[in-house]
Amino acid sequence: MRITSLSFPRDRRFRLAISSVLIVSIALLDSHTNSSMPLAFLYLFPMLLAGGALGRWGIAGVAGTCAILAELFDKFSWGPHTGIPRDALYFSTFCCVGLFVHEVTRSRKAAAEHMSIVQEEMAARREAEEQLKILVESSPAAIFTADSESRILLANDAAHRLFGVPSGTLAGMPVHDYLPSLINVPPRSGSGRAFRTAMQCQGRRADGEVFQADVWFSTYLTSVGPRLAAMVLDTSEDLRTREEASLHQLSLGSRILMSAVSHEIRNVCGSIALVHENLARSGQIAGNKDFEALGTLVLALERIAGMDLRQTAARAGVTDLASVLDELRIVIEPSLRDGGVSVLWQTSNPLPAVWADRQSLLQVFLNLTKNSERAMQTRKTRTLAISAQPEGFGAVVRFADSGGGVAHPEFLFHPFQREAESTGLGLYLSRAFMRSFHGDLRYEPAMDGSIFSVELSVAPGESDGERDEQYQPDTDSADRRSQPVPGEPRPAAANRA
Image 1 (tube, rainbow, N blue to C red):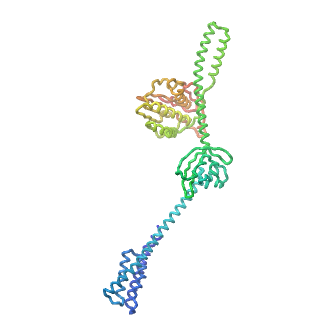
Image 2 (tube, rainbow, N blue to C red):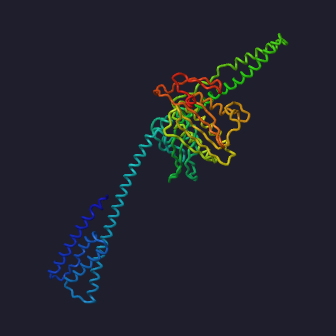
Image 3 (cartoon, one colour):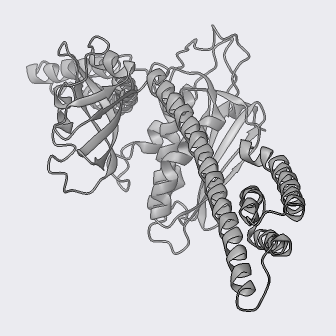
């Protein structure tokens, strides 16, 4: 609360009391004085006090009282021609003095209140600036501003560390020396409109090291020209992690693919070897060098196809199924919504932790979602229901769509299908991934649609130091279930009655 509002009531009463005492004193003095000199001018002093304590009507009332007392106790005779002008002069003089003091006092109070507000705003702004400065200085992201010549004006400590320069030396340095993509931002003319955007580009440190940068920046206009404010993050580690995960997925898929190809080659080699053996037994072309060379080629091809191309198990560990589903929701919902597909989510809370590789499991979910989206492209009703709940000793995630079902479900999980898009390996690889985690992927027919069930094994109750222990189930054939290794999670399918 302001000081003026606290002192006003007491100050007002004090002024009114002094003003009343002065009026009474002047009236008594004027009534007992025989001097021909009028004392009406003395009433100006109580009017000065009353003007600072009363409103306009109160001032007029006090001025009228003073005028009456002055006329009552003066020594001049009263007549219409002399008394009325004299009384009007008294009243107007007293009233104008009181109103003048009233306006001066009101203006002073308004100025004091305004000054108090300004001081409060200045204190709040100073506190906000201090908090903002602390936030910028302590931020792990590089933050800087630049002028129309793309020269850095201010930069925090994180910016100096990111660009590899000593603290306090970035001011005046060109931005494009460290972020070449910002060479034309902000526009030098300043005629373009201000904009806010983000981009990903390559940055360069002072020692020449290149890094990947995510940049959020905006431009704004000032009295001295356009300005740029930017926040930069080094995302090189994210790039490396993403590329390593992609390489891991590519390697894993390639092993499964080669396993399928080897299986088919072995079948063909077996048939050729049987024909070769039958011809050799008949003796019709015994001793033929080309025939013997054919047998040697068949044996060599069998050895190549028999190489151990079993998929090494993915980097399985304890995985939070709920967070994987949340990530899936973030990835698929925008594209499905644009495609006119209604997505219904039905998940139990809580969901158990499962044994899987997070990235591979997300890839399986994405593959099933894309398959459902393609199946519903020509359908009038497009609905995809995704449910997840604990079942038995694991959890089951179901993808139910209104895509009309599958004509030949017996060929769903076979590689190299003629009717499938591309190579027809999506479902084959997805099932192989799931079985490497001791889970499974199954198809369930439904009315006017299809359901794919992803069965997951519950994660073992291991300590934090043992959760990343890997295992190597045999997935040489996609149609053969892997057997659990002692001490590992039990297969989810084996626990379903």
